[in-house]
Length: 277
Image 1 (cartoon, rainbow, N blue to C red):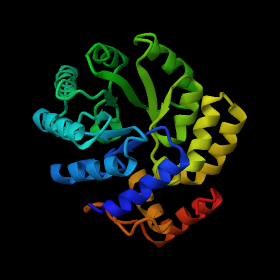
Image 2 (tube, rainbow, N blue to C red; image 1 turned 30 degrees about the horizontal axis):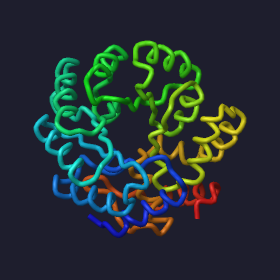
Image 3 (tube, helix red, strand yellow; image 1 turned 180 degrees about the horizontal axis):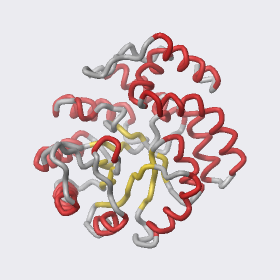
Image 4 (cartoon, rainbow, N blue to C red; image 1 turned 135 degrees about the vertical axis):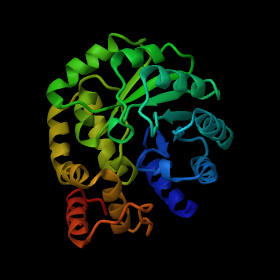
């Protein structure tokens, strides 16, 4: 765990004025880390931000008891909230996911966000399952994949109709998230925000303000990166981008391989277009 590089990333986020820090999400390679490595990352992050920025920590694990242990570790290490995905090898049923989330939510005193990430977990939360989980004490939010812009308003409205007013509906999938916030979402769980907080914040603030023209303008500037994310996966692209920005020399955990020279050149051009340096 390179805590110095982690602290450098976190300082950039705090200086930019982000609303919160998401640690050990998919781009944070939580699934590849040991329990001790995760604990060390949380401790280092909590020490760095010092309570000035809320710290939300991923605690996904194959086994319920392991996820409960990770939730307790996160609370002890200084996290402010939890993010839980239904990590699995054997495909899970709705009831298994419900019981898993209820057990982990009860393992600590921290609020928990449902992490609906079908592309990695191969489990999709229905609106009805989210609504059922929203009744579990401690489960307060959902991170959904951003829907296509033409469907966003209808999907957000349909889900909101099933949920308590104070239950937070947020989105990931960077290329669709701003439109989902325009449609009524309250949070963007951003991949690129971890590296490029300033342009990402500008996009989020435009969406929060309902400024459709500005969202479209900024999204157009991000489009080369979105295309790279779709083609190569955001994890590979972000590692290469972090290298190109001089933030870290770290490489993806094997078996994931670094991107080649041609792809890195495209990433460099995309970063230049955003004035990321």
